[in-house]
Image (cartoon, rainbow over all chains, first blue to last red; front, side, top):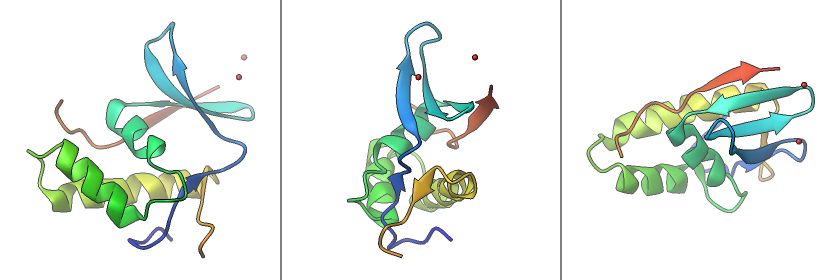
Amino acid sequence: MVAGETRPRLAAKARLRWDRTGERYMLLYPERGLVLNATAADVVRLCTGELTVSAIVEQLAAKYASQPRADVEQEVLTFLSRLSDRGLITHPDE
Amino acid sequence: MAWEAPDFVEVKDY
């Protein structure tokens, strides 16, 4: 479960990589990869294990100020849950 | 830059 006070970080098996050929961010892990859109890459870059989910949402809400914060929060939580389901992020404080 | 819901497409031969 991804909640506001957890501090997500990328799992050891996952690497964020800029694919110069396709000009896209990819999250690579053994035998698979995820092609990320721009906001997904923004979220993954902030998953350092230092920021809480709430802090990540705050940063993104500030960057994308035209978007209601509640929408950003809901969509970030959904995205992080999908990564968590695949074992691509961990929550060391849980 | 406009916000869009974070999303991904899984691909499979780093």
